[in-house]
Image (tube, rainbow, N blue to C red; front, side):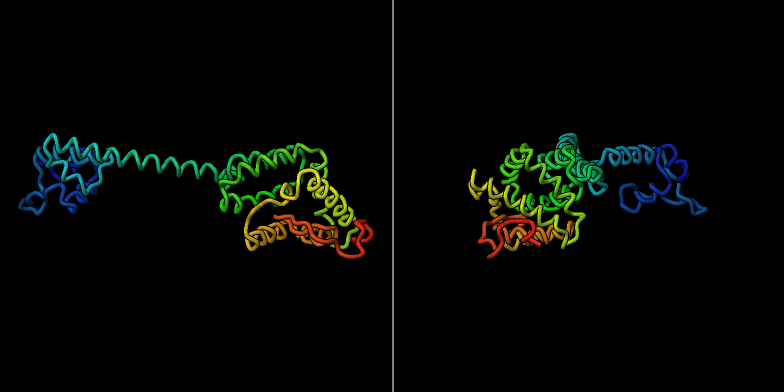
Amino acid sequence: MLTIGELASYAGVTVRAVRHYHAKGLLPEPERDHSGYRRYNGGAVVELIKIRTLAEAGVPLARVRELLQADEEEFAVAVADIDRRLRAEIRERQRHRERIARLASGDSLALPPEVVEFLDRLRELGVDERIVQVERDGWIPLAAHSPERVSGWMARKREQIADPQLIDIYLTLGHAFDRTDNDPRLAELADELAAYITQLADEHGEDYVGDVDIEPPFAKLLDALAFDTAPPARRLVELLKKRGWTGWTKLERVEPTRGVAGTALEGR
């Protein structure tokens, strides 16, 4: 006859596990000897090894008793069912691992790969990280809101950043973010940016520069994200409005403020 410690040792489990299996009703508790100790026979070792093997294979304890009592056909069906469940769990855990891996990769946490590639391309071109952050923070809700449109928007973005003139404006924007609201160089940038936007609109149509197709409240939210990240952007938008364009996320043509001819001096 075996003590509980000997039983646990022979079956390759802990004494605590044996007691747990008793509590779950998987392993019958033996009679106690005259000293009050449990005493086990060889059959308990066999049963405990079966329980341990099923548990280590991932079988929920709630189903272990069922499998121990099943005939060969029932056992095969139950094991197949458990295997399907385990494979589903493995797939889900793999998805969790992918999400965890994205946590260490910055931009890709909440963005499609093509947007991440676009942001990396901006960095390669020397665009100020604050501009990249403005782009990133805007793309996160935009991609979540309209995932089906991301590919089209990205195709246009890739085409646009192939234009050296636009890259020059990106680079200038980075310098502008170091300026105060009354710095005349902000007005100079507004002149340059308004001229470029107008040129694009005249060549390709206004939809080319302003087609975001989102609700105005959502566009305002994206604008607010940009202004929080780069406060000088708000002043730049005010200056652009005087030059015939309004908005940040969704550009729209407006009547220029009377008396503004589009010069840096008049924008101050």
